[in-house]
Structures are given as structure tokens and as C-alpha cells.
Image (cartoon, rainbow, N blue to C red; front, side):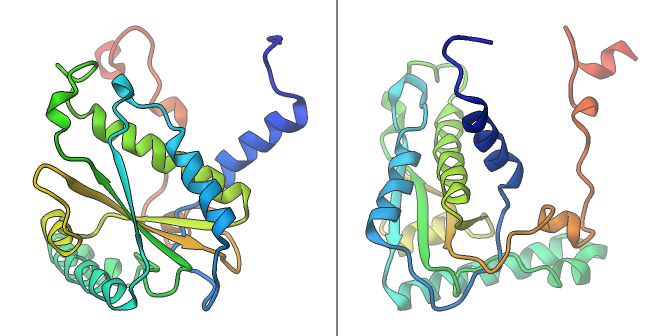
Length: 218
């Protein structure tokens, strides 16, 4: 064991947060999150690693009820379009709850900053590392929220351009996530899409290879 390792109890808590993190869609209504707690969560997000220390994430807290409603309408429009694109699974998809925008205590939009092209370090051949960095920030927030007993759901059913116009995101910036955050009555025992029979997860063994792409060995 490394001299730098956490204690057994601390390690167990980290792995528990990872294992019990869920993409939440059901939130306890009429709840709130204290300012200090919200600050802790956003600080956790801001401590994420980023390629070239570019910190591409921008967080927009939505406190205007009418703006929240308009965001919900954008998501509903994309939900219907996604249902059409799924063809034979349309009806099944429409039975799923895909967001908790109207019920969650806090609504956050995460966007990539504008003028990202100036950041070349680590992105010359992999420009998408800005998105990867922002995803790390969201995961930090997700795990911290779970540790605090709060649910978080990442909503990706929206038109980035339409949401960007609604929130005055400058040219070059891009909305990548709508985050629903707040108290929940219970966490799902399994990922919701598993519980609802939408899809079964693959085991790690099916996704792990050594030295080359797994199909190459076959």
C-alpha cells in the first residue's frame, strides 16, 4: 500500500460514491440547497483537471423561473425529435423520464468557453479535450453531490444553438449540459435505464483489452 493512500474508511467512501452515483431524473419537490453547500459542490467541479490548465467550463445558474420553463420547453422539443429518430423504440422511449428540470432544487447549464482555439497545449491533435475536461468537472460535481446526499441528472436532450441563444452564450461558446441538482426521495438501486429495461450495461471484461484493439486478437 502506498504511503500516500487514504485510510481504509476514506477509500471505501470514495468507491461508494462512485458506485452509487446515479443519473437522477426524480427529485423531491419544493426543496432547496443552501448557499454554502452549493458553493462546495461548484468548488469541487472547479477543481477538476483540464488539459493545459485551460479550465474550459462555464457554469450558468438558472434562478429565473420563466427561463427554467423555457429551457424545459427546449428539452421537450428535442425529446419528441429523439423519439421520432428512434423509430420502433419511439413509444418505449416516450415512457422514460428523461429530465427533472421543473422539479429539481437547482438548475445549472454547463458550457464550453469561447476563444478555446487559443489553447493549443494538449489539443493540437485532440481538440475535443476541452469537452473531456468539462466532463471531468461535471463528474466531480456529480460525485460530490452524491457524497452530500444530493441527486444530479445530466440532460443532453437540447439544441446547443437554441440554448446558447437563450442564455446569451457568445459565438464560439457551446452549451454541453443541463444539470438538474437537488434532494431526492431515493436513489435508484441501479441506473434508471437498467431498471426500466432500456439497456443492459456491458461488463468491464468486454471493454478491456491488452496491447491492441480486442477484435484484432479474434
